[in-house]
Amino acid sequence: MSSAASLFTPLKIGSIIIRNRITMSALTRNRALKTIPNDVMVEYYRQRAEGGAGLIVTEGTLVSRQGTEWPYAPGIWNKEQVAGWKKIVDTVHAAGSHIYSQLWHVGRVAHPDAPEQILAGVPVYAPSAIAARGGKFRHIAGLPGYVTPTAIEDPWTLVAQYKQAAINAKEAGFDGVEIHGANGYLVTQFLDSTANKRTDQWGGSVENRSRFGLEVLKAAIEVFGENVAIKLSPAGGYNDVGMPLQETLDTFNYFITEADKLKLAYITLVRYIEAYDVAFDGVKRSIVHDVLETYRPLIKNAKVFINAQVLPEEGAELVASGKADAIVIGINWILHPDLAKRVQHGKPLDNAPDYKHFQWGKDHSELGVGYTDYPAAKY
Image (cartoon, rainbow, N blue to C red; front, side, top):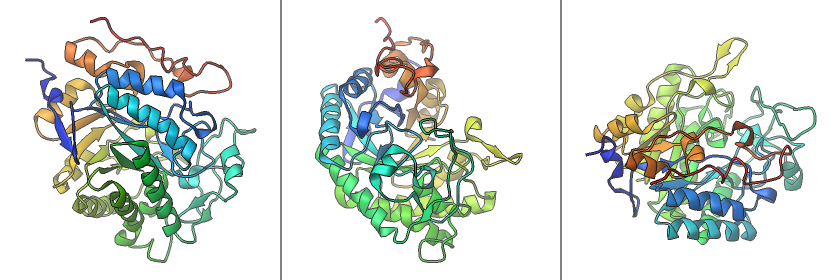
């Protein structure tokens, strides 16, 4: 029996059964010109569905126009986007895989001068008027960093945007939605006391800071029932978030416990990643702790996915031991459209990364370069 055998047993998540435990992470690739999914994206997702992915999670999909650092990220707020996503969903299903839409709002790490933010006609919103440090908007002259955002007057208006995005995802045929609650974006900004200084029901106590993310989950559940998930990165770091250890433990112990009571399909836990551990004034932002060991025991209902530099060999051990129900792989799915088939057949993961073209930019015109041109193995 293959050492990876534990990865190739079916798994029930929500109301669906995925064919294996190797899932594809959300991977922002910047190919959605004018925010609309296109034919080259259909091909990209088709390759990876045919390559054996048990579950594909889309690249972060914006619930509204935002001036992000990812100028060609797709959205899901209008009918044209829904139609584009439906082509992708139908293609993935035809290849025998399943697909969740990752719903994304970047909050304070947008920029008012970005073209999409200008089109939106609204300020950069966040829980509080506190700028994230760092940032570099390559598509704006002068490579500006983050700005001080405008505090959201009524967070329910943003909860409503997530719900509408879920309704649109349902119309496109997605199997479920994953709320992006990781990496310093909007849900994390509400959770994190360094980004959220509100004194109303949305800030202050652990319960209040958790409210926004929990209400977003509840809104999505009204649309998708048990086919709702969330991605969390308790170790912080990326996009200038991270609380002291005890506050981190208190916050995520509460949030994960309450989220799990909602009977989600799965919870993805992102492990500490050194590359995301950004330092400001010589102090790193991440709170290094064993995310899986710490929070896995709290999760009684949802399946547990583990993400961040997980290779198949380690992943098979985590699944076989019951520490995780599935693994989430990112960059290796970029490099190997047939990743799951390679693992199943003992083929090496040996494609070289084309880092220059991980995201699309003005330095080249072919959307497929470094995107749909990675070769599959010979079987």
